Length: 521
Image (cartoon, rainbow, N blue to C red; front, side, top):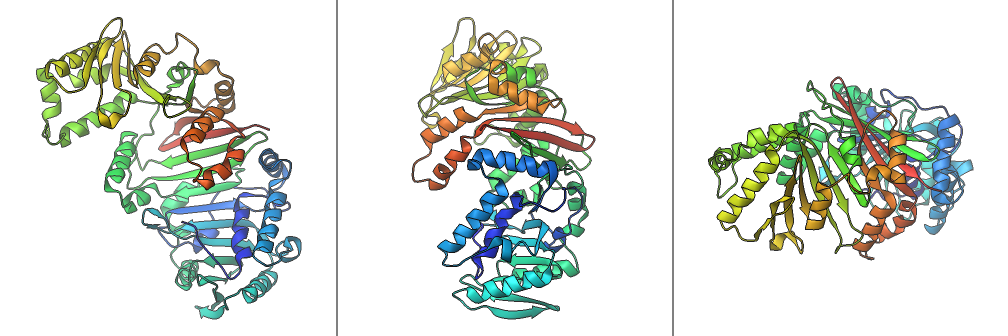
């Protein structure tokens, strides 16, 4: 929902520099942020980035940029785009003359709340090394706008308000601040002189987990976003998912650190669990055994524990209108199906998706078991559903036992549940379910070049999710209509992503994850 329009559009465009380097400056370091002291307390999202990295960080940033831009370093590319954008708006910009004299080392963006389910307009802050030059730039640009700006003073801070959207811009101390309105700018002044996001313990605790040497750090108040979400059902599902992972949604925060490397982009993530034990487990073996043609796959650590909690919640709440609270387990028990015993027998879980268009799209959930309890339960459940003459249920027999369910809400394919030996598969389509059931017996993800590269890049962090970049993009191109111009404009850049690998771990009460995107030349 970032729509800031300013009487000085060039300054608004400089926000793009929050994720690039322009040379000079000093190396990145993690820790508390002075720019966060301008953000209102309780702000949901805050991002801070190096505007002028040096050394290895700059080299790696430029290396990744050249793969996307066709040869230019990221700083040079964005400066060129800024100057071109200014000309299109009927203005001129000499970045070296007008901006470099005052541009500082860091910039930040804060989003205070949600509006209609989307992030509110941002508060933008850019450090200034020369406040006199920065003020001259603001004054000059404000005077060039089609709509006049007015001078405003608040708590000893002078700033400009104007433009087609009545945006506000000015210096607060040694920082250039651009806000949506006079009200938001005054809130930034209040934050700088009193309570702010930067002064909150939960923000400081979270940002302390940011990685050293990052180009950008992004703080997210997960609990706050869930609470402010207008979709009650989605919010409850999100809370349930976090609770299943051992995370208190009311206190959940996360930090992502972006670290460019020569041919990769690394994002380190961490989430405070508020006293809960971080989830552990390694599902990489099962993940690697999934079909080689999968464009995406993810494994679940502690799958049986998560499923046990989900079933307990479902039993407590019931399934209206047929099952009242407490009836799920008892009803199945009468049919000879002990849900608690079955769940306890389960081990690892993973999901894969395959297909290159809507007709071939499919996938399956694959679960391994420590005994035959799950396979026996699938056979019993199929018999129970057929005996009850549930519409759309068909028996599946042979080496694998189970059943399929067809309905209009599922589309053209059936939901297929099959079991054999120590493995259960629930697939969208028979072929996908059988492929999941026999995963490991044919060509697997672990044998593909992209998966190997992802595992190698993650190092000692076990892989827990994988995306084949070209295959996923091929599907997206088949599904996304040409009217979605934003996507199609991004396609040339998305084609540079060869794979995405995600690994996860834990450190005391902090859940950690690492995302690596491979970049092709």
